[in-house]
Length: 391
Image (tube, rainbow, N blue to C red; front, side, top):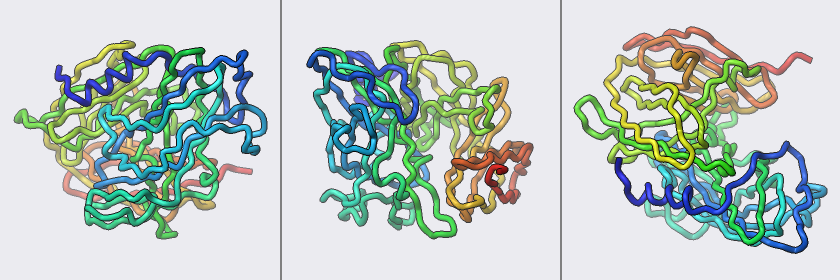
């Protein structure tokens, strides 16, 4: 097992924190008596990312983070700002345990039900990876060096609610990590021609210590493989919505040395590693023990590839998440996930085989296309239609 600076960063988060958050309350809730006789504790906020290998950079400007104090959510006085970085972050630099501090704030001791994250509309004065000033507050850099702006849906401009309860204990530090999933948050352009930022954020923190799954991915010759997506997944056959039968609970992308580091809650996971032109590797029933580091080295072999492509239509408009799944681990595993706006196209290289395509959109009926065959050296066309629910 190798410990480097990234490993130590992750260890510091896990072993030196004083208190992690408790399990969350429901949407729209208010703080249940946050004041306890004037006693206070400290909330520490950090940012990390699950990452993706599809873009050269994903820049997001975070204006501030507020905590709900209780009462009417529409009244500004019921929110307290706990971090105001006003900074433009490249999410792809915050992988494999790397953290960026957002802020440290004193709060009255008690239980809080939610936060909100405000996305900025003006970039900071820093330079991007191309050495240029930021052209937009939120944007991606494509392999072609194009920099399309990411438009924030109007409903999110007032703040992205993070409904995850946490407790501030007297004279203690509660540390929360906002895990910003760039892969699911960037929606590729559709009919509108706009790229969209639809933030998908997990709040990491629990009274039960987290665990780390880490290791190195190599090819059949033992050479390190960068750009491999490694994810810790859970399969739930009882989920009513097919979209929720496979849940990605933590993911990252290997660095230049093939190294990866995933922070997850203690539990049992199916670990999946995938990179285009290689067969995916699956490790079933991996036990992540609280407070421990689990070493897991992975080898990928070259694949006989085909291509799946098509157009995505979302009735009534909106964006879709396309989950490409294969049988495995006494259920299914997700090989790849793609976010596409209505009318957009998707194209994905996959190892030859049979896949279920599960396409979902908020408020719509999840579409499932079973046993879609991908043949080596061939192209499979699958147009996806997501419909409104029946009245």
